[in-house]
Image 1: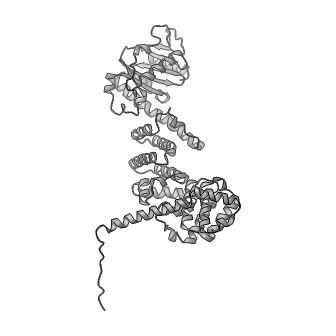
Image 2: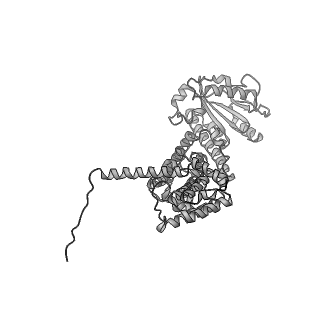
Image 3: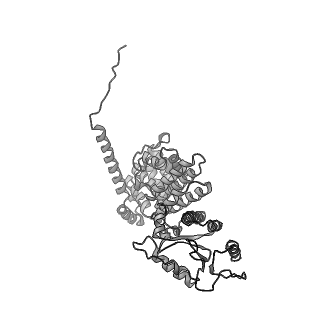
Length: 455
């Protein structure tokens, strides 16, 4: 029996790079053909012919592309039974890869549309006719092509999320693996997939460190993508789960303030497109972020100001505090840890000529605690009073995000020091606002006042 020689083929240097460049060029050409086949110009002419009931204009492979261009560009026709019938007929007669790509693009954008099941069915018919899914693996290798099987199935977005969760490096790793461009990651399909991915990721019970890392990486990638409008809900969901599971939230807190901002920023109000449950998640997340910032500011303040009694007292009310701020001198500012001096927290930090002041709100009352010992009594201000207006003005001018903040004179915030407006007088009478010296048993008297005022 003759020996068959073993042959080895060696590509010339640079051949692989040339082939790779060639594939990229083919990819670009294919995309241009697809885009031109379903462009607005094509749709404009097709709409004229459709309205004129010139059905012959659509009886060919090119005619099918014209119908797809109408689907992509004319939302009013999506539910039209005659239009659906024309597409169904043409797909049976003139299936093409270009039409398949057009249908995938429409499904990606309109994944939650009420007529999506009909168009997924048409996509399946075309794919079966062209035998594009042998053994469930797509023959289409560029653009959305590798996701063909997912677009056909009702649970495709959830399946995409599951695939991403199993992939090396998670969401970003899976996207890189199937060579999706950033511009292609958009629409309702990927919005649904991103929510499902995060839910599945956060629902895992093993390796909390991995969950934290991948969740933060995912949120950062969403912020840099076409899915950014989903960031508020996705971040809120992550915040609630981190809080529920007791995961370290320092990095998440920082990322939230960097990408969405303070809880009083307009970004937190962009909830019009969310469900009632999703809106509730956002509201819960705002409360949690507020509590995180409060905890951080109180910890830093009492580390600067050594007063164990006041620290112990206000810790009991920490979860009820809102809009916590620190007004501190440059000396205290220099002693603050670097994390608190970062840009994320500066909107709540103010400049003073001396001292360190803790300012916060509980319901309709504003409280001012002066840091240094014997530097002044607690001030309690009614939220709608002239003193509150004065406080807002000086805080607005002293915010440390300004290039040259105006330094607050702490004496100007001792609104009741020269009056007899005492919060709790010697006879036990309790007023709605006023000053309270930190004298003997002040904690018990203030606690009774807090209970009586419903705070």
